[in-house]
Every structure is written in structure tokens, then in C-alpha cells.
Image 1: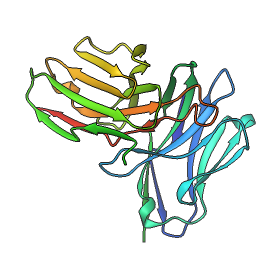
Image 2 (image 1 turned 180 degrees about the horizontal axis):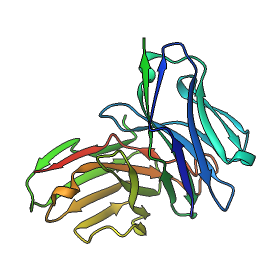
Image 3 (image 1 turned 180 degrees about the vertical axis):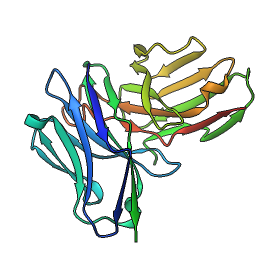
Length: 115
Length: 116
């Protein structure tokens, strides 16, 4: 079974500082990995995805993530945090059966950005 | 032009009632899903339908019954609501066989259900 582990349920950074949200995965097959963001009282928005092409994936809002097979990691980074980045971030791994893609989510990391 | 839309966004109801949440997607996808997000923000798949056929059923109580009249719609009906059903329910869709977006699942805005 596939799984993801997000280290740190709560991360606080200063505005302008580096954002690093950690995600490690477990998969018996080459994984498809995703980061989603959820702003307060809103739905899930796709930030970026890894689908076995480039290992460094660029997403929306200046975020990027690097797939490292040797470390089974897919950490999310942003060079400079902005107040508007405050949200809940979810890492997920996909199991594609051909007729459905089943996402298994991590427990989420709440990003707080302070002045 | 919301890609995946679900209604209602907020629903407060009493225990024992029956309620439905509707979902529609205009992305041309052939697979739709229901996910549940509990009070601790944990997200878990409930159901998946492909072209109106049930594909995934993750040991959800029988009180939950999804219905897909066509591949663009997937509704969720809940009978005899219990306090523990309070959660956010997300509808989603994807096109697993697509070479472009196959594994990407697009989510709706969520339906906040509160059972009192």
C-alpha cells in the first residue's frame, strides 16, 4: 500500500524566509506525487505534481518540489514566503488503476507566515 | 466557470435526517470521486465512479449512497445522519487514461456538513 508522511504538522516562517515542507512517501511502484494547498474554508488546489518526468517540479505561486528516489522524498519549497502563503498543505501519492486514481494523503502541514 | 462544483457549500442538519450533496464537473472527465475531510483535516477517499460504474468503495457505512446519473455528475446521499458524519465532503474528478492529466485529480470547493 502506498503512503505519505508529512513531518511537522505546523511550520512557522517569517515573511521573506525560505519555506520547506517535508514529505516522504512509500510506494512499491514508481509513484505519482502531488502537493495540494487548502486555504481556510476553501477547497483543495493543485500546487504541483510529479509524474516521472523532471525530478524538479515547478508549480504555481513560486513553489517547487524535488523528487528524490534515494531518499523517498518530495519536499516542497519556496524561496521567499509571502503572507498569502499561509494555508494547509497536503502531500499525496496516487495509485492509478486505469479507471480511477486513488489519492492517499498525508496528514497535512499548516504553514504560518509571520511579519 | 467552476470546473468541479458542488452544492450546498454549507449544510447544518439534525441527527437522523437524510441529506444529499450534489456534484457536477465540466472538465469532460470520466471518473468522479467523493473524499471526506474530518475535523483533524485528514482526507480519505470514500467512493469513485467511472462512467457511472462504482470503482472504489472504501468501507463506508451503508448510510452513504453515491449516485451517478451520468459521468458528469456524482451525488452523495446520506441517510440517518449521525454526529460523526460532520465533516467536509469534497467531490473531485479526473481522467485516468489521459496521457496529459491522467493522474491529476481536481477538487471542488467542498461541502461543510454539520450534524447537530
